[in-house]
Amino acid sequence: MDIATNFEAIVRGDKEIFPPYLYEAYQSTRLRAPRQPLVEIPLTISELTGPGPYISRVAPEDADLTRNSGTGGEAIGQRIIVTGRVLDENGRPIPNTLLEVWQANASGRYFHERDQWPGPLDPNFIGMGRCLTNEQGEYRFLTVRPGAYPWKNHTNAWRPAHIHFSVFGPNMLSRLVTQMYFTDDPLHNLDPIMSSVPAGKAREHLIAAYDHNVTEEEWALGYRWDIVLGGAGATPFENEAAKTKEAKEVKSR
Amino acid sequence: MSKLPLTSSSTVGPFFSIGLLTKDMMRPALAGPETEGEPIRIEGRVLVGAGEPVVDALLEIWQANASGCYNHPAGQTTGTLDPNFSGFGRTGTAKDGSFWFETIKPGPVPFEGETLQAPHINLTIFSRGLLNHLATRLYFEDEAATASDPVLQKVPAERRSTLLARQDTGATGSGGKTVYRFNIIMQGEGETAFFNL
Image (cartoon, rainbow over all chains, first blue to last red; front, side):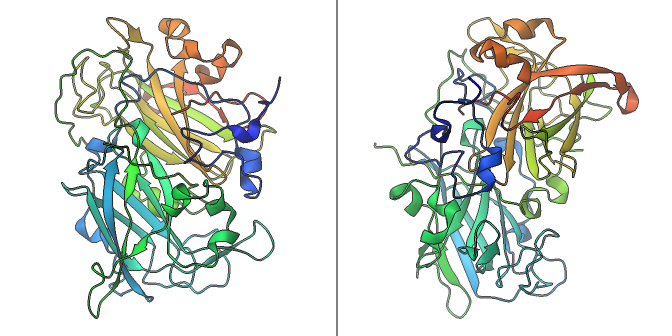
């Protein structure tokens, strides 16, 4: 047998929540999705640890994408605040964990050499942000609303406005890279990447809510988006009483 | 209390370097002269079945230090922390799909009871076209404990070799480091065994 009998059914974790590796409408998955079944392994200290707790290399200005280009200038576009909590599946906040975000500028162009469509670049916008959650698991970014982005997946293909999020959490099981979308976008149902996520709650969960309590007068519109990471309920095969010590930020090289 | 549904996953897309390969988070070199342990260099390529390079993959590694201790609150049941070793590395593939890490060979870490796992490095792969990341492990072919490792045993026998890094005796890394070769094949002939994590 050289391919799994149901190649399309290969999913990591809960298939009601996570997309399959192969999603035909998103063409790049055809060449990159694994064809062999994923291997079930026992959870050991290797999976129940991870780099999340020690990475803390963030400067406060990293969370302001409107002013972190290094030019001293301010990005053009609708200024928005994106905030929310990072939680585990039991609803407990995950403090001091790193979030890394990246996005297109207000015209839908990425500051990247491989993005060459004729949307204008903004010299004052790189589209990179980082922050750590606070003790309550809260994060907050100030940015501009990204534009829709054309891509070559199919004829007249446009990605809905989105922000890419990368989150570590406490262990290897909590590692997540995902995309946050905005409400009331007519491109949602036309997007194969968004449609690869099971319809209903899992997909709706990826859409940030407009929150007028987050909006600041004469400053920025507010969006709220919570992230729920796995791994909290995981227990090792059998573990000796773990000596808990603080992880330390050590020298990087 | 009822469980909250998890947030779904998505691809990193083609432009992740903007957010994930920022200057201080690009970390192919984890170990320096002061790090305890045997310095090693891992070299490989990320490929798809027909042998085409994956030019836009992001790799992350996570490993114990030379004494078998992870730099994590739950990871210090064995060994001691090394102040000169974080255990975390991240890099992107080059135009030919190649990557490298310079690190140290990890020590064995606990399994159940008194038993140990063979030295290994945990690997996570992200790329355009991957709606979920891929997780696997790198083992060392020349470690006696590898063949009987309890996690590697869960991988079907005919696929275990996809997780073995082989010493490249014809190559030497800077400072006389041992070089191990390890390719990741995302799909097709020789496909790497990935875990459901």
